[in-house]
Image 1 (cartoon, rainbow, N blue to C red):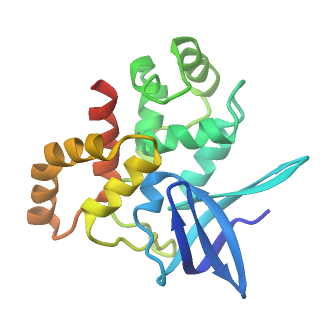
Image 2: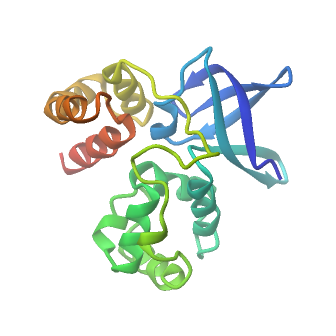
Image 3: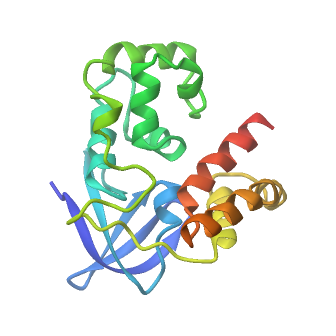
Length: 212
């Protein structure tokens, strides 16, 4: 199993990135939140999970080991494959996934494209005793733990967020509408921390567009 990749980011697309490792470019499928933190030409480390099928080898990349482990655990639930597990993490961070499952928050899980009411209830039933407490989650929206450097945040946040939303199927106009509503949130982040958490804004944008 390929547990992680570290190297120069050679390319970024709406659904993944190419990371050069030892002269070889590895295509890695990533959530929009992870993609938004990557910058072409810069170095990055991604925790990874290799999915082997009869006709394909697909490498999925994550900002840290905890997110990767949750991705793999989600797939142990009946009817959950790698794409759906990745969709869960594209909408909710690990902490929120654990909270939704432990609190039986069906509506939160139904925000994920491809998960209906029955699917959400099945996830809760099958994973409630296996996801662990929400207090054990170390992959909050702050810096990564020592020894597990997160992928490098980049600016400007508007371009990153627009690219991520368009890559997920929203129009440029819809993306701009969400950015306008989230501008005060971004300004507050800059005042409070000196930077913008693009992954946090992306989740909020998806919630806004989903309600629309």
